[in-house]
Image 1 (cartoon, rainbow, N blue to C red):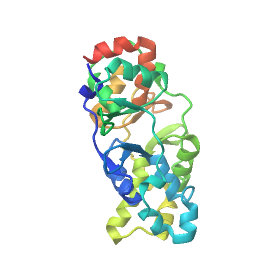
Image 2 (cartoon, helix red, strand yellow):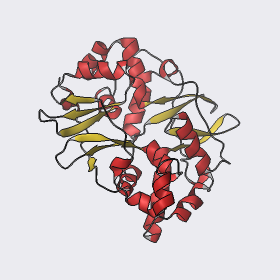
Image 3 (cartoon, one colour):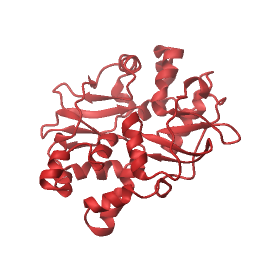
Length: 285
């Protein structure tokens, strides 16, 4: 089986597109966190991810442009000024085992596919792999693959606090907890989506608008209907739930609602390490 058979996501943006376009894309596509950036000939130039957008919204990136031209001008600058380079590029006819082995060895949640001429053909994200593992059971408990050192945030915190915590700890989601009991969850995409809605109301997105939104309580943007998984559930149940709900992560909680950890789509890597890449590939076919 070739890696292109997994149904790569093909959306991308041009390196000269304004940054605001990236905000719209990531704010309106549920379950996705990264956008491939290409040139006019379709060659891959990099990636823009949700955490980078949060950095810009908080003034941690693009500060010199903001000081010189203003916040609104930052949003109109070409996305290539803010993107990250990507070296995870494979020919589209590479066999699946080779690619998944690379992802496992490098703890990566994606690879980019190109054709023989080097033109962009799509991105394989964790969701492409998990959809092929739907319904499988691994004989591993969710507690065996979850992350135990979970960053959380208090429901009284601001959206700005949540964004800063995500940036500082390089995470994309935060359980919202009250006395160790989970009461919600907030993601980078939730914050971006919440900010973009302001533009829809006023026809523009200004610095004062963003500052006001960032100073709102995190309860205004968090999801209160939290989908979770229990620690002794088979890891396959957690993967199924993420695919079926189109979410990137699940809090791992006890029957009493106490937070144990968090499991995300990229944790298929831990399953592949424990069960073996060849076994996982065989289960996908």
